[in-house]
Length: 317
Image 1 (cartoon, rainbow, N blue to C red):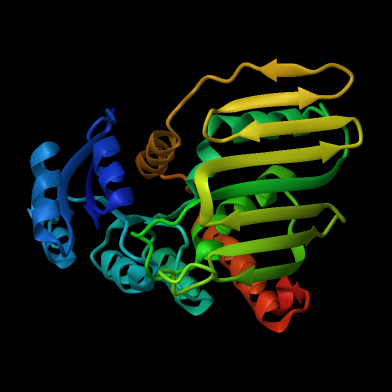
Image 2: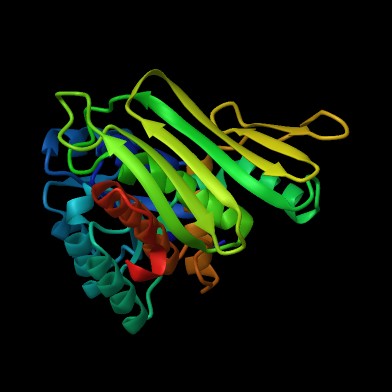
């Protein structure tokens, strides 16, 4: 099996996990990591037998590296990804794909022009419960879907400094709903606010989405709850599918109530393996840059809706 030489740019909480997982994937060869906090980069590099750098451009200058994970703050995604593409590297960029739609579109265009893979890190799609729910919906286990409802709440993460809870958390469920239903979001209506003094952006949001088919999606996200909860329910005319992302459990309620056996897997390992597979086999990544743009449009439209206190159509945004 061909090995892909990889680097990780930014080894904070998420980047650290990218480095850890790459070091354990059979067809990945982690060569380098970088972080502005050089001591952190040194620590991660020593742990996973890689070379450390402070300047990410030093990683990009390594000709042997085929691909990089970009795990820097969202406001820096565009610059780092464009530099990586210029250095002929395939890229997996953590969600959200970029800070603005203009930046995201430029990234996608540049990757296509240079015949490089650009994948967006929407890791929840690789959670086995999402894959199981997709199969159940396609098999008609709950009949035609009527609505979906997500709750993604927990305590404030001090590491998040450049975006609010909508971009950090709600984007997951908007993407998962779109993926499960295979149905574009038509319109969003949202309410948001900030209660925590230590948070510069919104720390809670309630978002309603209307899909093209008429299905309704409801999302509750916050950084106010003292415990983590990551749940999704899909309601159909013949039953309900209930997912727990953390426990990786699936329950189906209908004529018969049943727990579905799901093989537990680490979503990030599945995501990075899929990215490497797309490079080795020259295939389109499972979650493309275009997918990243669509998810970003959803959360930006929700933020616009909250500002205007009106519904916002996705196509108008």
